[in-house]
Length: 373
Image (cartoon, rainbow, N blue to C red; front, top):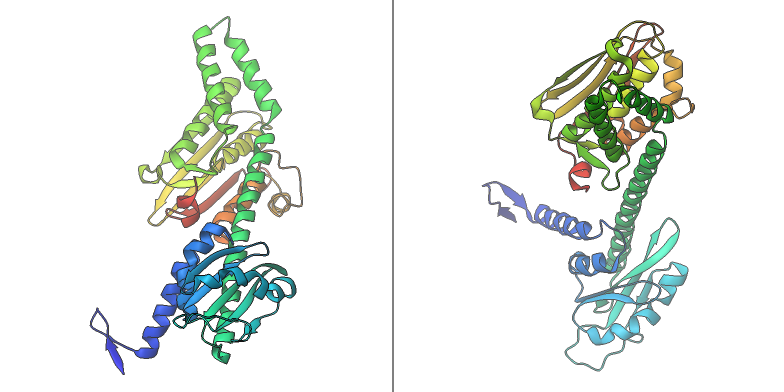
């Protein structure tokens, strides 16, 4: 038998059933994105029951029944006792009419299959399909659904850990805001107090805005526009100290300004160029910050003509084998890879006395960036 699809093609009954199962699993997976939570289980239960094809389904943890979905909810009070072996030993439990007793003639519940949900060797709960006496196929299906739920919970846990890791990286980066930069900025501002009080006032406001942004609490993402505003504040403060020794060139494509990127992903690269590239050398230095529109992607690059570095030293910094990176190249690289994968890692081109170019490429639209606060 074949079914005509809405688009005019034909799909078999088997393909139709496969599509419906995958679609149902997708709908259930959305509600398990935060893990094995009460709300998520309640919302996912109807879809999980559809995947098993049973008249009723229960989801429980070690303490209580989280949700009963379907017919025969008068059996709810028995679930925890019937699921004991699944919850304590991690065994799949098959129950017949002798264990699942019911006096209701219209009730379809006469048996159950209860499978444990095991995440990282921890039993976090159980999935119980209730209905007619279980077949071998239902037993296998219950085990597969429980394993699928466990996988969704593991993905949610990994996402949570990744978020925590990013927050820890941000805290570390904030803690790395150079005391020398703060001291030198305040010293430069103080030097203008008598001779140019209006400029001193403007620099003080820039310093306040810079530190407010750098030390802010809140989301782990921002826009390219906001990052560039903070870069401009940083450069105004550094130019007050370096004067004509520091020449800045910004080449920004307007299309990239609203793109969301990890917070403090660009300014540390500019700070690295100024502090480690230009400050150690005599004479003027140039920094070029480029933001390029590449269609579906954005490329950010920071290039300086300073003293450069040994490639092996930079490799160790990016691999986490060196703590000499006080400005945060390694920190930015780690966070980019956490969000976008290895393709977004920093690319560093450098050699002693040859300057340095640091760049990264990220997609304009990313589920992680768009969903984050």
